[in-house]
Image (cartoon, rainbow, N blue to C red):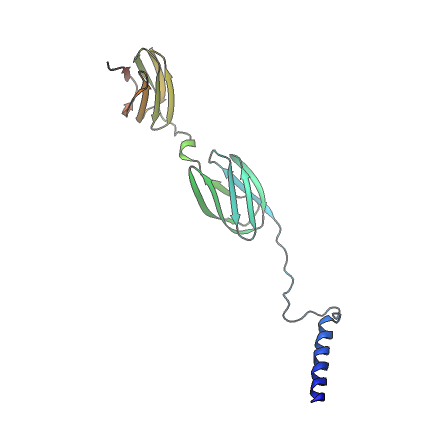
Length: 193
């Protein structure tokens, strides 16, 4: 029995010594990973057209978070495929971007309220404000407008088209509706008594 104990102790000692023995120079164990070249970061062009400062998070070969003002910016990232997220235009936006070479672009779309109206015919609308006070007018259609109209006659210039409107005046009263605005239109506001 003593010989079995001695053999077990000798095996245990040999295992412990081999675990702490110095490695043989140039020897690479078979189960070790082979060295891998580290990719070089490249310029990734991000065009933030949202009209807002946003925080863009990109997850892929690496994790990045960028705070981006409106406009174009170059960011250094590792090449590869990324899932991205950001908040703009009143909600969460997500997508996939593939970065392969310097200058690959990502365009973050403009929020609807920040899009420039498409070129169209601008028309002059005559306003007759018979309320005795100022009228505040909001228009939403081919473009968005806000006007503060003094009592009497005035004119406004807008893109031709159909608009939804809300007007406030007469001590806080409001009216809403829709109106087709084109050249030669005269629009009158008054207070009901």
